[in-house]
Length: 253
Length: 271
Image (tube, rainbow over all chains, first blue to last red; front, side, top):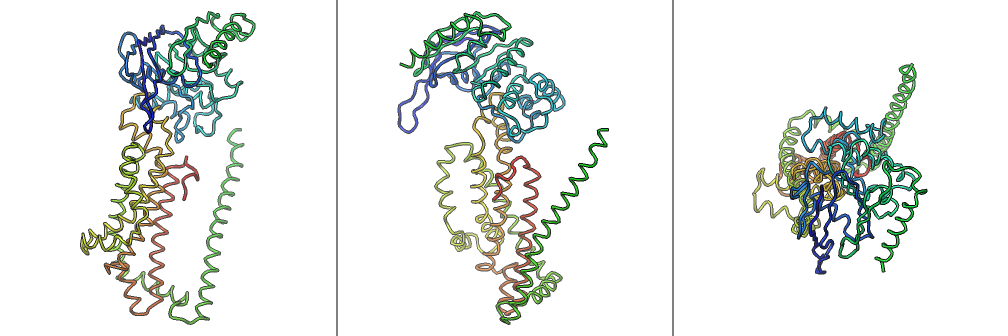
């Protein structure tokens, strides 16, 4: 369980400009094995929120707790999936996937074994010795996802992970992610600016307002799991999308 | 079946490769041969002390490389060069990485780096000699000064190509500062480090010869000055050829090292 209590984050102003308030009094509770999407226009502090939960950024006020323990830094219970993949260009697919394990001092044979298991899980067989620049965007993010899963975290923190791939690849990645989570459930905090993606993937959608980032509303999705392919036929799916769109539009004004 | 299928293509590849290396060898040798021939012809026509004949230069070269003074001079010169270069590599890499990692270090060091970059190094020679005398220390300092800036600047440029996201990614998996340095910064800057070392090596050779020719008549510099005084232009040219030869060997060795140690960088960092 992830709990955010009254979280506030300010970034110091660059070159004499006033500091920006990125997050203000954010309260949020995420249950174990729940899939929560954070949705909001750019500049609403979505990524900041994620990095705070990751322990990459400290809060100015408030606190973050995971299963009751106060978060003071990064931890083996959490793994991050980056928007632009953040793969190491000098390392091949296996080495990239095993990088988190390498940092944690896992023996080479063991981490390669684990990497190979994940290559199969994310569908990258045959690309073990390829370098990132030889892979498409979608495949690169599969490597990023496998790298996060390799350290066997309880919590996946995903920062617009499918934002920079084309629509078709995006659908495939979404489906594969849900299938992976069905097999080994994890708590997922997923940042996106796509309404359809948020509804398609999550149990609850957290709507955030920009400048400063505040929780505007939390919406229960209530669509069946496992998610069927033909979500478009569900009135609830269209209603939710419409409602969230409306909210986002109102926010921009 | 699989093995049978694989054999012919692999043979094809090797023959192609040797074709290409033969081509490269020809491309290198032919201009050299034309150059040598042109040199010989022009020198015969001019018959000047300033331009010894190519054949005379080669004869002098053969005599030089079989004589003791050359190797003594090489030993003395290279001692200072190697020491200065090693010192420059150490400090250049360290400062280059530091500047890349911490903006504060960059703000602090940047003005000095710019000053060093635009200062003609030869202008510093008298100062170094005043401070450190005419001994080994002074010669090491000079080769160091010649090499260090280009190494630092190249390494800094390399560190700048490191995506801050890679560092954040490593930190998200719990990397310590030491791991960030070893597994991201050093590793990512490796192509630039190797390029920097290669460029620094060329500068170190320049610095060594410059100092020996101008202020401390020792080693190869003294050898050159001796031939100059004796108006022995063939030996003078031969000595220059030896120096150029050494530089070429060192540089191609470091280039080979670069390609072996950082194959992923491709052609991106060459130059």
